[in-house]
Length: 463
Image (cartoon, rainbow, N blue to C red; front, side):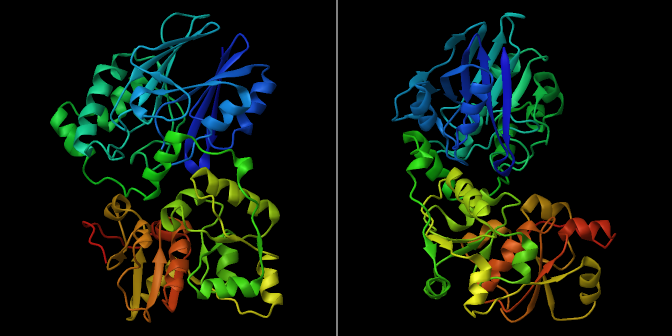
């Protein structure tokens, strides 16, 4: 049996290919499906089956395009209400692929239609070898229960408890666990960085599996959930019908500097995808920076929404293409265009650049001994409560989709996150909103702690 995991770091998403005797199965494919076609060709197998463990909310799946290009059958949980041609999978459904047997378990909880796939490599043993758990069971965590229009979080948490204890944990301790997401995904809140575990390891170390009481499980799973981006429910609906092929998307159109200036003045969005340092050194006034180096697509979807229609600013044609692809992976397809010639064309047109000042944590600590500086922490609530700079204002970056913090727009604001990626995003949004003295803290809270500077812990109170 051939088994391969594909891990997409920017979305913390894992998909899989399994094959036996020339026939392949793809599970939870990402939107750009060339990687599966190339892997199939390299391994001399034909993709005949595509499984979705649920209607993904944090990315657009490529199941429809992959099925179109291979003739494969799509399988998804019977509760999904999928409108594309598919096989509706119910508990106990089995598929034999060569010497490999796939058995589906209906495991509602993260979503009503969630399924897990138990894999047996019958060439070695008829016993289960691994389970692909989708977003039901993660390494160190379980799926969040608040992504349904039809069920309350409490109802889904009850279902999840039953799915875990009555089905997943009935598997042997030696069974390998392969989830659909890893650390950094918003589909859970406490995932480990590893890519594979076992039922036995999760039984002993996963905090959610230590909760023996159903009522306590529901209470903990529905408390302090991470912010749910607006696009999550939209992505799930797109996946219910199946997304169009990437090749069907229109080409980005070039935008002249003068036209971009007019668009920004009319409240249009310019999205600069260059590295933080380049953006800080000089950028189009009013543009926002979400660098390609981090969780670019997730933050773009969360902060701009799927109808944002940004004009892209990049350092190369390759970066533009990468940005377009990654935006499409979360459903942000309708980009307005791109700044033709990039920042160089902007300066050649004799248009002014804006900058973002930066400060080290040591210099910030010295500044805070005087008056007139505000520190803005844009990390998420668990990060804040684990430790923060005393006197800092807390306004998580997720909130910027709604409004900037209520701070004097003429005061000096030193912005930090964990390491500097999110803080530069926040700085750009603050500048766009009219904050005049924004400073990025180099290295963020990680650098503050490494410098052994004092921290405080207290419950979060937003600005």
